[in-house]
Each structure stands twice: as C-alpha cells, then as structure tokens.
Length: 173
Image 1 (spheres, rainbow, N blue to C red):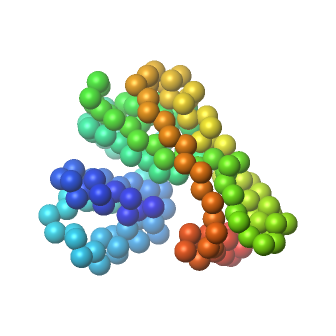
Image 2 (cartoon, rainbow, N blue to C red):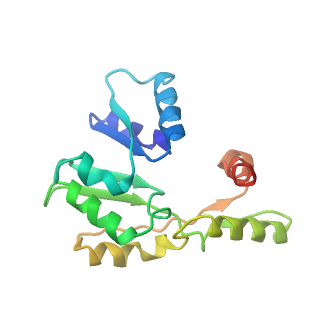
C-alpha cells in the first residue's frame, strides 16, 4: 500500500516509494497531495521494478528498507531478498518485510463454500502464496541472522472495510 511509508517520513526519514505499477505510483502521489500532514515530509515515489533496484541505487545507500506484499509477487524471493540486503547499510541497516501467507488467511462469511472459493482465488493469483511461512528460512539463507519475526493472523469479516470486496472486483474485472 503506497501510504504505508507515511509514518516513517513523519519521524524524519527520507522515504522513496517504488512500485512496478504506474497506477499505484499515481495514486500514492494523489494521496500525498491530499494529506493534511504532508508538511515537511520527504517522500518521493518512483516507478520501478524490484529487479532494477541495484541499478537504481548504490549498494548500502539506505538505513532501512521496508517492503509490503512484494515477495508474494516476484519470480525469485531469494534473489529479491539478496537485492534488498545489498541496499541497506552493513551492520546498522534494517530490512522490514511484511508478507501474507495466503494459506493462513481466513474469511469469516456465512457462506463457507463462497469463502473457500475466494480464499483459493487469492492463493492462485500470486506467484508465492505461502511466502509468509518461508521468510525466516529465506532471510537466514541470505545471511541475515539478526531476525525478529512476528506472525499476525488476519481474519476478513467485513469485505468492504478490509478492501477485500475491491480486490475481488479487481480480479473479476
């Protein structure tokens, strides 16, 4: 979500948001323009693909890297993690990765058959639907050893409030 970086910028960080979708970048700029708290925020959005990160930025050029729902979409999460590790400063750099595990998502709906179909639909729409459970191993294999991992169960109850209804419409369209 393009607005996820706002809290970092609010603490004085220079934030560069990157997404492969020009539509997402456009929406992020629009959200920033309408924000009541945009004063003195150093936020820039750029169109780009994760495969091109090392060409876009020098190694060890960031204090931290934050990704959300990136690894579920890439061809090689292992390669992506390696690229992210090259971007952060050695020793003090931090990488924060927020990824779903579509095998653990729960949709609480009276029509259980429909809920299971939607759950399956989401699992089939991404390259790595079970990336959440693989993160620890992949991070360790990349040489990242100071890890703090937290699993957060997600239960969809209100499709409109959670954005699930919009996502389903997007899949159908």
